[in-house]
Length: 317
Picture 1 (cartoon, rainbow, N blue to C red):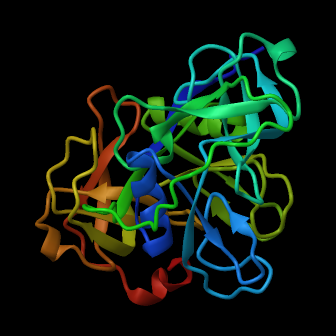
Picture 2 (tube, rainbow, N blue to C red):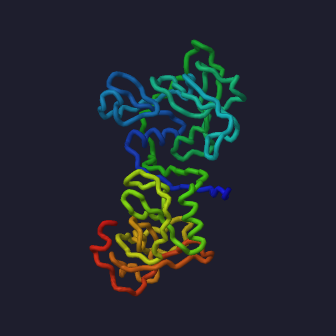
Picture 3 (cartoon, rainbow, N blue to C red):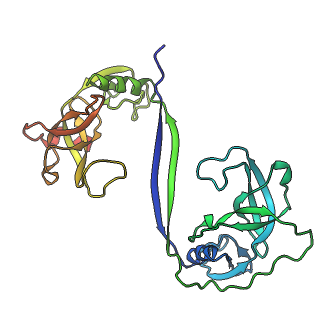
């Protein structure tokens, strides 16, 4: 039985967004150890606050302070915290309705075990030592000793106006997973190690797809007939990249293109090198330049052939 290929992969990028007046006040308040909600026309207080009433869709902006204490409405125990979660030891995810709010806020509860957590328990905010204007300024919730029926903490009534308001946030997004290519792509990867580019032909429409997926994306039927394509091809479309990517040792600007390899029915993408970026064009004939380990094309360069006629590649734009 052939070895099953697999490799760890990470998709990661910083998500940058600007804040409207409501979210700006909410996050700035957390930095200042103040929890703000927003009041709707019918008198409900929503925490975390939103900019539009979820019932009427009307814009809302009447900010109101709520207490840093509240009641657990529901919970689930997290036995194995993952990277980036609020706590590194087992904890409970809880929905907490803060005193003065009509909705619940999702966060972590630091508790010694699931037996110490129950719906209706009283909790309070544990503030982070260093705060920057983010939901992580609430480090977590922790149990507090308030007895049932005891008056909740009274907020000071902050109006939501602060000096040096937070106007934007950068939220890191990351996905870690194990990728296994399957039969068709495993054969494609093995072919690259031999400097061969293999596709698979659809038995119905007869198009050759590279890289192969094991099925025709148009007809939906399984593919198994291997076809060697290229290695030369034609640039069909392209873009000029002007922003340097993290951990990618390529100087900008550079060109990334869709390349229709000879014999293929679908264009694949690759970097164009060996030519000034402003001389790359549709129809340019290119060939692969293999990586130092020879396992994949590092980039494609011009072959010196005349440009391909538009009619020969227009179906693959």
